Every structure is written in structure tokens, then in C-alpha cells.
Image (cartoon, rainbow, N blue to C red; front, side, top):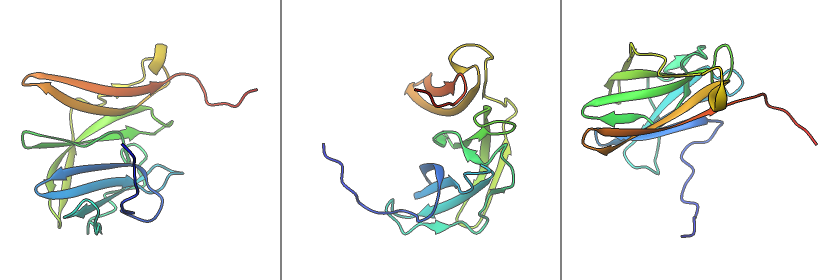
Length: 160
């Protein structure tokens, strides 16, 4: 299979966009302040290749690195919509938190933090000793789920 360019969905700088389908529309979250990781915008479209329209309540999050940067694909399951977020305070990829989206229309948006937060966090040892910042959950059977996650260990550096 050969990949080919189809369309530019949005112009600008976006970090960790999360695209999902809900209620007959495409929705996209994108973090737009990569230096602060603290501004989350929301867009919607009737067609995947656009045009994409910024939601009237966007930015959904502004000035909060604890909950703005997407931390995985939005989960839509059995009437529930869950947005995952990287908690980048005090450091990048500190942990992953989840928010239930309780209202999502082209005019309104509401969410509430799930009480089980954080759902992923650093372990202090091993492959995820310094951070956890992404989750992608998949239902593989009627009562069985699997989640792909990532983490990191060590510091970033440059060497020869």
C-alpha cells in the first residue's frame, strides 16, 4: 500500500491531535501551545477531510498543563465518551488522567474528571519510572479490553 496526501485538515501548530467520531460527526482535540502544553482546542466536521470548524467554546482548556494535552484516542463506548489527557505538571508526561465528556454538541461542551484519576502514573522503577503519557484502549471481546500505553525512563540527552 502506498500512502498519498489527501488534505490538510487544519493549519497551525497542533500537538497530539485526537480525532474521533461521535453522533454522526468527526471531532478533533488538539493542544496548541507546545511550549506550555496548556491550551486545548476542539474542532468538528461533517466529513473527515473537512471543512473543520472550531467549536464556539474552544479553547476548552486554557492555562492548565495538568489537563490540556491529549493523552490518547478518545474512547466512545456504550454512550460514554472519555477524553484522556497528559498531566504535564510538574514535568512532561507525568501521568494520564481521564475526563468523561457529558455534553458534546456543535454549540456546547461539558466534561467532568473521573474519580479514578490518575489512571496511569509513573512507577518509580522500570520502563515507566519517569513518565506515562498515552493510552489507547480497545475492546477485543464482549467483556475483555486491552490498552496500549507508553512510558519512559531516564533523561533526554545527546551523546556521541
